[in-house]
Image (cartoon, rainbow, N blue to C red; front, top):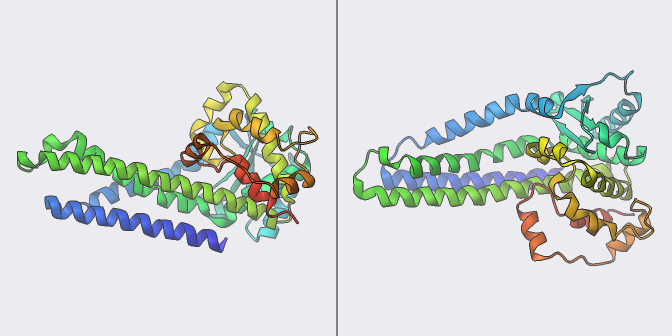
Length: 322
């Protein structure tokens, strides 16, 4: 967890340094003294998102919080994992969707919530479910949602600058000769919006690797999490498209990128040597000793994704195999 915080903190420093340098440059070029306005506006949007986000997740995913009497097994697993992770017991919910997955969210450790979908309950065995929930508990323990929220401010600042300079330049109170510079600044801000957004996606992928490792550190065998990921990809590929569209905007919360499941299933099926529908320790050990090759298209897709390439991710899990 310490290394995750270091990496995310470095990203925060880099991104805020970029936006500070750009702000100073714009201020000197145009004599603008209210650059802080963009930070305030972006911060306001992020604050609203931060405060209303949990309710939006609950609404979109149709989350129903359950009591211990309703889901005793689920409570037992989460309580055990939370105790090992040394975090407060989170609220437990079930999302009413056949899409097999799980997710964690909340504004703080004390506000932590762990949810599973109805689809995942019928797909995984107890050990696999425990590995998945260990991943979600690790997200709460790492507090990585807060970091991603803070990082998201920067692309939003550049987007606001770009929109203002590109679409409202006619109302800018400067001489007409400066119009060309205004357009260039707007285009530059749009490019920086794209680049900083890539850094946010990179941070999102980092946190998935650390949550995987966190699940293993909580006592879950790497092969169980690998099998769970394999089954989730397979189960998602079979889920009707209308259910996938409903949750498209929330896929960063999930264990895997649900929009890439059809492409991933063929790659992961090659790891299942005995066609058992799982990835056992022997198959994971074999992957550990082999090299994986990603196509250019795979690398581009990963660059634009909130989650790591699944083959790379399971390969990383094989490194934790004892």
